[in-house]
Length: 197
Ligand code: SF4
Image (cartoon, rainbow, N blue to C red; front, side, top):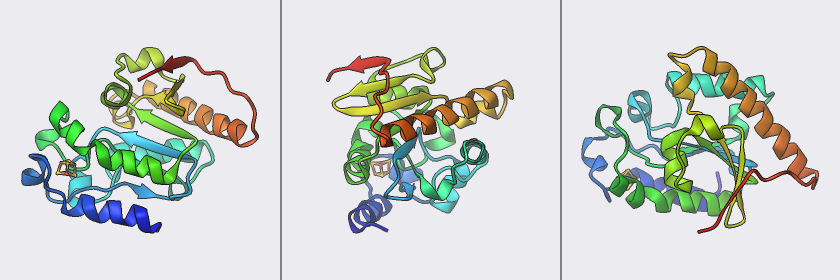
């Protein structure tokens, strides 16, 4: 574990900066390889994550792991986190104030890992990080904002009740790792959308 990232993790574990600290069982810091080329960012911990203190360990996590395997990538080689690190009661969407209060932790994770791509998982994350909406319309696309590249796809939880979306997620994750390969080989990739802040 990288020392700076461990410090972020310890701060998340003891954090009481927002209301979610009152109802959580455990905070859920990001987890994975600090040398990863990609950070996967989900919305918030769910019931299993809250119980275990680890991100994406429930059914949605299994879907993400399966998609990674499909792309020939092991979960241990990537870094996975959420925009808020504590579970919202009854899995409601995190409030704006909670997202804003928690955002420094994600910024620190990004600054330490310096990923080639940030993979946005679902609409809430799309909205929080880029102000976007309609992830189905934009999934599979590459966004550039402030010299950082983002890749858009659906949240793995969306595939639980809609089997057709498993193919969508798998297809996107395969594309994501193809893009990373191209970036590592210094190939020029096409940016679909450019944002400026
Ligand atoms: S959600 Fe984030 S800001 Fe709120 S208590 Fe948890 S770690 Fe702290």
